[in-house]
Length: 312
Image (cartoon, rainbow, N blue to C red):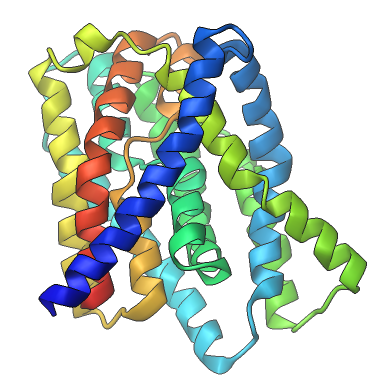
C-alpha cells in the first residue's frame, strides 16, 4: 500500500507541477507586460462562458452510457451537495467577530475551491475525461451555492440573490445540456465531436495561464503575514478535504469518482473570490492574498490528499 501511495503521489505531484509550469507562462507574461492581468480577466469571460461549458458538455458526450455511470453521476451530485453544506457549516463557526464584509471574504474562501480553473484541469490530467465528467457535477453544485450563499457573504449581506443565475449561468447550462445528451446516449458526428474535443483541450492550459497572471499581481509580503489567512488555508486545504474523503468513503464512493471529487474539494481557494470582491466593493487585496497563499500551499497538500484517495 505504501508503494502504491508513493507511486500515486509522484503521479499527482508531476501533474500539479505541470499545471504550475503552465501557470508560470501567465506569470512571466504579466511581468513582461506581454499578457497582463487585465487581459486575463477578459480571457476569463471566454473561458467561463464558452470553453468551460464546451469542456463540460464534451465530457458528458465522451462517457459511455452505462447503468453504473448513471448511478455514479447522481451520486456525485449528492456528494458535491454534501461537501458545500459541510463547508458552509464549518465556515460559519469562524470569524464571527469580524466585520460582515471581511468575514464574508473568509467564509467565501473557505467554502469555495478553485473547481473550474484548477481542479477540473488536474482531474483531466490524472483521471481523463471521466474526471471532467464527475468534476462537472461538483461545478454545477458550486454555481448554485456561489450565486446564492457566496454572493450574499462576499457582499456583506447587501447583494440581492438573482434566482435566474441559479440556472442561467454557463456552468449550470452546460450540465443541463450535457446531462440529457449523456442519458440519451447521443453520439455527435465525428467532425463535431473532434471540434468540441479540441476546444475542450484549451480549457486546462488557458485556465492556468490566466491563473498565472492573477498570481503575478499578489502582494507577496502580505501573503504570509495575516494569521487569519493561515486558518483559511488549514480549513480549505486540509480539514475540509480530509473530512470529505472520510465521508465519501463512508458513503461508498471509490475509484475515479472518489479521486475526482477529492481533487475538487482539495483545490485552493476559488480565483473568483477576488473578482467578486471587486464587483461587490469588498477588499480585493485580502482576497488575492488568500488565493495566493492557498495556491502555494496546495502544491504540497493536494498531491498527498489525492494520492491518499487513490489508494483507498
